[in-house]
Length: 271
Ligand code: 2AM
Ligand code: CA
Picture 1: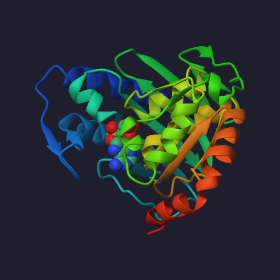
Picture 2: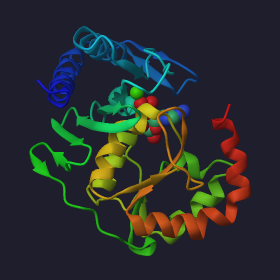
Picture 3: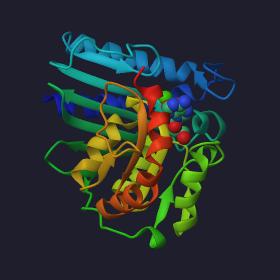
Picture 4: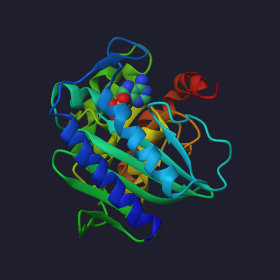
């Protein structure tokens, strides 16, 4: 079995387990703050994925949100970047609109991306260079748009922040309207499907974006941080993704003029 087929089977089986575990009462804990939640299901799902990978591929490395290594020794071999539940607040409060996200890298290069919308039972997947799929259906290339005729994705929590808020609110004002779905992986998929022209956020971890970006790349989407720099799976960063034209329009007209504020904000990612 190819690594791709193994990963695809694993993410579907992990989703099965999530749907089963959800029938029991959740055990919810807080992490860095009272709104940063983790449940027994996040942890059990990451464990399940981690153990299956290492049983079959003992030399692979895993970066997982819930404890299985946040840093890797080297990027030479195969690295899995796993978020067992992306959109934990949706998982807890809505029991839907969350995803399992997996990105696989080989020698530092993207190999495959998976974003599984667990409750809709829809798997988005891509092998680098071979196109992206929604279940069995190919996703077409995304089309260019201009900001004032675009729906954009941004979490309103960022728009209320003191320094970055005014920069984001100018972009929101110029757009047709904005949406917030609460799962970065599914928001990246919305851009890959052309439903949102762009998605931007002040802070994402590698496991939030690794799987989605490999899929986005296959339909011609562009990604960077808010300074226009390349994203890596080595650290957290700000993120702006979109169709080529709107990504460029926002960077040039709305972000570059504030590069002093943005550069200062990005110091936190270098530590
Ligand atoms: P999570 O549910 O896996 O924690 C919500 O807007 C999106 O941002 C979700 O994908 C969520 O991932 C992610 N997220 C929430 N808080 C975050 C933080 N402090 N840093 C990075 N990503 C975060
Ligand atoms: Ca998570």
